[in-house]
Length: 144
Image (cartoon, rainbow, N blue to C red; front, side, top):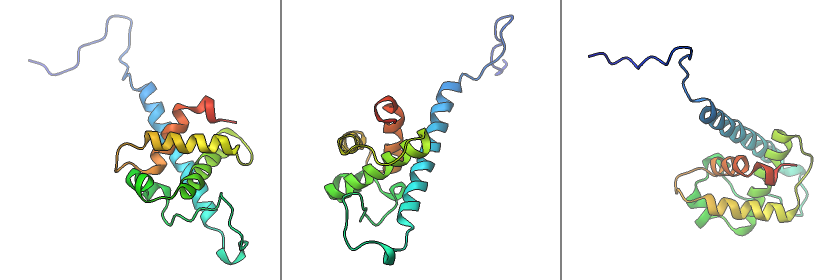
């Protein structure tokens, strides 16, 4: 008995069938990298040169979003930290991934924040993964 895969019908070539699924996975990985890079860049500024006033877009959460879990999003982050994280992730995805410029409207950031909360159901999933997945699945809604 042979364990080889059956041959395709005459005139058809073997195809892996992975293309749509693989493209989605690659897209999520790229978007996670974009979000992580933007957040790292935003956090990499010298704190001594920052203004003493804190805006709602300034993140006080001490961990990277790729190292922040859904449990931390739902239990440990304040609403202000969640809003700033949503602003970081959404701005990064729109500006670096889709050619946007500047911050999206606060209403869109709040909507993205709410979407992350809704999608953040697997306790160990990273915030960067959830944000990237949300942006990709709702791209028409969030892109510039």
